[in-house]
Image (cartoon, rainbow, N blue to C red; front, side, top):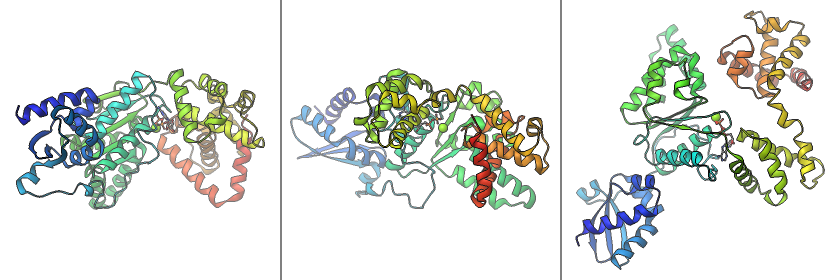
Length: 451
Ligand code: ADP
Ligand code: MG
């Protein structure tokens, strides 16, 4: 038997042992090139393979290979260029980017703490995301993740990004589409006034001189036409160069109907993952994971978990909120035991909130309009004098902070304003509150009037 045959036998064994996607990523392009005394040399395509195989698969490789050959070999993974030049490339340098670069990734979201339970849809979402993370720009490009709010889209994106930055020296950039729009509008304005091409270059550098671009909540791009064009150019350039693009949205590409057709077409080029609300079992699994991480498993009885899982049916964010609320309530009640009665009491207003949220926006508009002596119509109008625009900003701020409504929804409820207008209003009030204690109290009083 020659070494090619041995290696093929080994690959077949390996294929049975691991997930097909992992096999494809890490083993499909490997080749055994020599077997000396007790050293097996394996040719791998990229340095990331070298590192990943050594660190994650070596024990399994040795075990399976020993089953075939009866000999315990040490494995060495080498690159083509090392063979040619007879040198060794130190893979420890991988993972340390040479220039500091802000990727905006949140390390708390990982694949490890993304729970999938027995749900096939969720398992698929995680496995495909992992496949993209292992070989960015290679298999599914773009990766388009869609689903309703609070179902884990942002979590998955960060998990992919964190995985890539941990295992390679690729440059990953995560932004929300709002940030992309804002960056673009800034350079666009400056450029118009001052012919400032440096700014344009820095924008292009930021978004094109990278290996992985993630844009979260792409639906906000629907209302920004000029930015869509720029995004189209960015997309093409990255895609052409096999750079990975990952997009999330609250709708499928086909339902983003205000987006340019050519963008929608491109979003369908790669793979689309649809994240569905978790079923009861998955909700229970997620609750168990969250209380385990927070070290409160022992004090969280089964009936309380079931109560939360039965009432939070469509949003994992809300599920987390319920857990926190119940634990905080127990602490507030002088550390009482967590019981079903206590949970019901703690969550009394919490579960109904979402049902009456539309009424709440109207309520906020009324409360604020009354306080400032204007009408709700004025508030929803386009009038820009400050006796109207300030109350409008305050009401938008309250809808965002106290009701946690989304920017586009608030925009819609205020007479069809752009979400960037809402964003600026919220920021403005935030800033004023931090400088002015009286103003802050005034706003808190308004918030306390919401029923
Ligand atoms: P989206 O971006 O879809 O609105 P997020 O990714 O922000 O939702 O998720 C909301 C919260 O729920 C986050 O704290 C996230 O960690 C958590 N979450 C969502 N899905 C899962 C899951 N399957 N396992 C663990 N946590 C999850
Ligand atoms: Mg999100």
